[in-house]
Length: 378
Image (cartoon, rainbow, N blue to C red; front, side, top):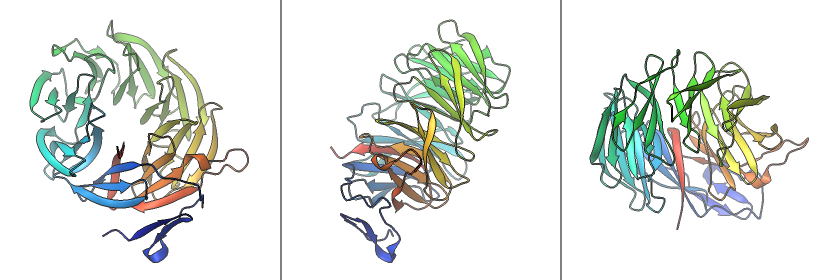
């Protein structure tokens, strides 16, 4: 049971005095909406009211969640949960966020599934085998299935066309025409591919090769390697800016962020960041990159324009994924070790010598928060 919490003009009051608005900003206002946080360990989605910054109930699930994906139509208050059961069965679950209930689910393979959506409103999954599966977003009925050359590790869908690029076991990448179901001849990468992201114009797919510390750039028309970009670290985490003009990469090997210009297909620079930087998220106004530092229990704030760290703040134990609210006012940090949601008010970030980003508040959500999405109350 969550503690009773009361919002005052001076911050949070909570039973036991555990929470406080760190910045003490009397003029701070919340976001009129909710954060939906997938919690591993107790099979729920925690619902957080971002206007009062309080836990507002939970939604039970049938699986241990690993990801959350919003409905392809932003007007639909629906989320899709990817996860697995105790025996390893992959589950795709459709959740109605209005009635706060899981409405239907399907078996999607084995293990934690990868879930993507295309511009036509179709949900795609891969999970533990050599297949891509398509599902109707309205009722999760199967739409199509495509056989691949090997087991899929990760895949991405082009933003504006029915095209997927799939990382396969054995150092391969394979393009799939999602409209016809045709899988093209695999591209040999020479090293194990672990993640792929399309450039925003859909003309290029960027494939991370973790063991070789490389980013392989593939042309989607010729389905061939354009260039390979050596990296100063292992590409564990990838994050685009809101306009897709920069790609940030963090991973083992260096306490830094690698900045890639996708349209020039070149590495711009490698900038020092916090200790063992992990997952990231970008805000657009102002242009900040928020970087989790799990080992240090902090988040580094990187100014994208100056390409320098402007602030560091302690947020909790083992911070992981970060989500920025649509109004660009708050960065929500999922603390996976302490089971809470850390909130940074972006307007309170002060650069210069102060290098301050005070923690606005902490909201206990329980378990291990693994993914989140934010929707407005309207």
